Length: 293
Image 1 (cartoon, rainbow, N blue to C red):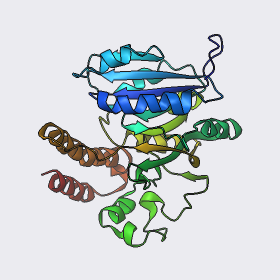
Image 2 (image 1 turned 120 degrees about the vertical axis):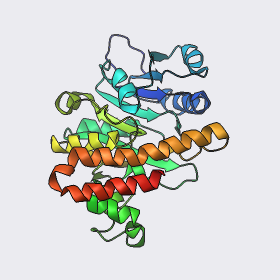
Image 3 (image 1 turned 30 degrees about the horizontal axis):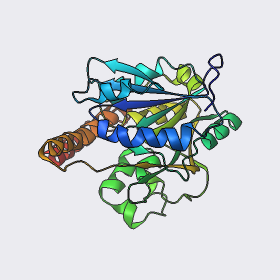
Image 4 (image 1 turned 135 degrees about the horizontal axis):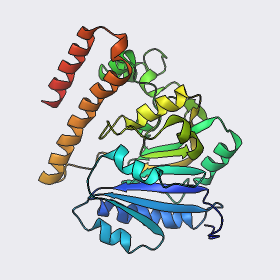
């Protein structure tokens, strides 16, 4: 990692934390040893703490190579990340979940910067994000969740016919995962963004407390003429679906499950409600109520 203080950073890595010290203790050593110590670029790391009640802030404060921003409130994913994005002066920034890990093999994020430097129309790029068991985190390779695409997802038609375009659109599952290509949306768990493009597109939409803010942002980037790129040349691990091991975590899991469906309705209201009859929204609202009951 370059250390010339006079030179602006090429990449700022933004890590949002809320009571996640256990995850940080996995992520940060892997980030330091498997990427920061090897990169050809100048990279800085910004951690945002969303009013944690554990000892995360003490842990982060002890790491001299991390700039820490503390929020007095937990305003959600978009709110917390926006606090850091507003301070970024680097050419690119990477939103990185605290429950991710940079593998020794495949964790070279420099290839993403190389691609963005070469293709100026690319606004967002994602590495191949793998779950703990090695399978693809499908959230990193998504299509626009239109009402039809969402129906095929919840009815599981996309799993039965993954290579049929009109049925597999939710995760664009007909595309080759070993090739670089454009997608509609990726996950905010690992999203590298062209800083200059944010002046055109705007910040993350803070009406979304959790979920859909990444899909919404990707949609706004596409509408502004930028491409969203999936790049399998870099990989990272997302330790997803690991909650529920004790009563407290089960409560968190229940809340996040409810947020997922409530946010789906928010996204529909923002982008699709004006184009469909009111009865369609009533059905969608009823579906959400059933799923979170």
